[in-house]
Length: 358
Image (cartoon, rainbow, N blue to C red):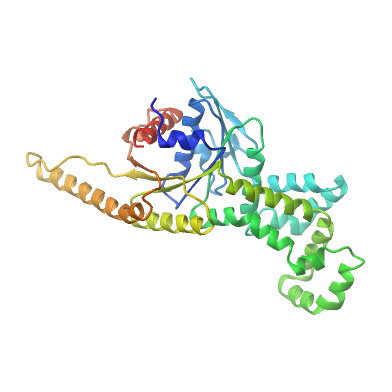
């Protein structure tokens, strides 16, 4: 098989982050990239950090329980490499970090049993994104894999994922956090003298018990912050390494193109280079007008051609603004909707289509 830009991106990367708006086929494309990479000899783990968790369906596995927070090997005939898959579980990932940085089991137990921790480890905004970044770091350092493909949530949440390590460092270094987390001989006396009016105001809003739980959590967290700060720094470094590639996926519709344009601009403002843009599910060209066709079919052909022209117009501005970024235009693949086709076989076809369209 002749090497392509897609193959070069896969071959030169240890991490591939697949991003774009919802509904453009990110999860299926991520799975197809993973299948293609495994067939070519890579030991690849594909992970979804999207709360929608569609990866199991994309791989043709029966239900979410078939793929969890730990990598599961997916049998793939004729593969020279290996295909593994997993779906992020925020709470389990956070628990593992607490266990890693707690000096003893008693402190880890106090944190894990704390009601405030139970809430933030599963539901608090930002926790999902940081744990996703942590899971990526964990997989990147796992000797079983030489490539990690990350299926991200829609654009705005994907940006939260990329900025999560830096936000965690800022939180840990915030003066108010330093006061609360400080050893009790200093910190609690400072809180008592300086912050009691603030704490009373907070208690009126969230409830005294919730505030007590939060303060108990921060007290139990004492000593773990240095490890979390260093880990956040290491995760951020992985996200910015030259061996981490960013693949932005769009369709030809106006809204996904606008989201892709916005996402690429945000990455560029953070000095992150996009390796590849994939325009997915594009309307094929079915041929020119054929007046021998019945009028109803001819009208349908013209309608499809108008849709194709509109898609090309939507993509033109993005393409012109970034002439140096490689593009792949992938037409709709009719075979992928054939119910008689095995899911992994369909992903092979899509992977081939990605290479052929390169």
